[in-house]
Length: 100
Image 1 (spheres, rainbow, N blue to C red):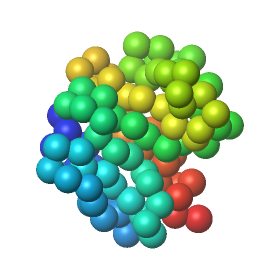
Image 2 (image 1 turned 45 degrees about the horizontal axis):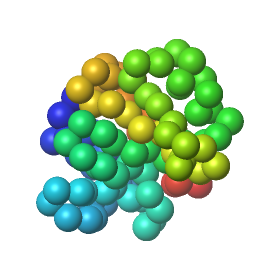
Image 3 (image 1 turned 45 degrees about the vertical axis):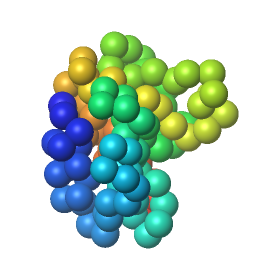
Image 4 (image 1 turned 90 degrees about the vertical axis):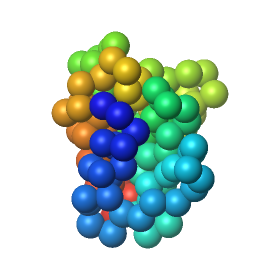
């Protein structure tokens, strides 16, 4: 999945707006982070802690949690190896959490 595809998908969700810079865009709903591009291959996605382990177990090559994010509601999606449906699933979780 490319950063452009991420943007198109995220912006297709209700009330999601793009913010940030050209090189580090982020997508927000009601000013709450859904996802932010860390670099061209790494997308940081805010997901509920209760669902994070499930993503990591089902898609170990697609998602990770570096030590700096362990205490936060976030995962990294590795766009160069994740399937689009997996990334979209995580973005959906983030959108649901943040839209409430």
